Length: 193
Image (tube, rainbow, N blue to C red; front, side, top):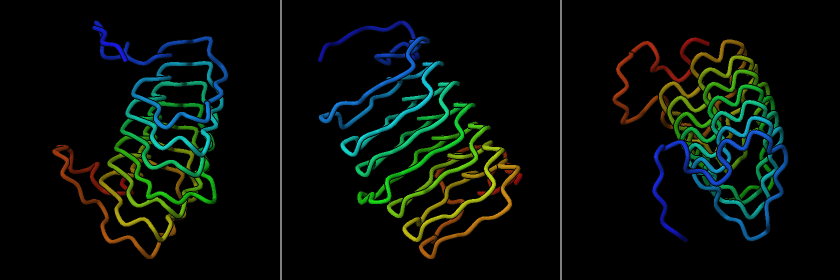
């Protein structure tokens, strides 16, 4: 690795802002996609993460406004804060059926993905961070797996098309957080649905 000095926080990703990038094939040795790695890659339309990828770090695909589909492999353990925030064309997110590691979504992970209609959550999911799916206004149905124990503040707030939610047997905490967010109106897990 090398040390570099950057003038802007948003400039840190290796492919950040590559507006022409439309396809990425990930190698078998890759375990972590670091922060801002593909941020603002506006022509990237589909991401298929192989089983060896364990971590999608904070802001990794933020503002990839052309991204329509994301498929996670079986090894995923962490989807970081803001990882896919404001991917406004994203309609479908899937996870491998045989996912085994415990998985957690960070805060705002899919926040503002206003076209998101389908999310198939894996049985390995244990926590959904603050506002993780807030503003996913086309999401209609949600089945939360039995492995999920924690749904944080505003996790599905303003999902205005959400007509059905099935809570798994493992949910022990709704809306708990250490957040200092000041707007009481936005604190409910399903506020504004």
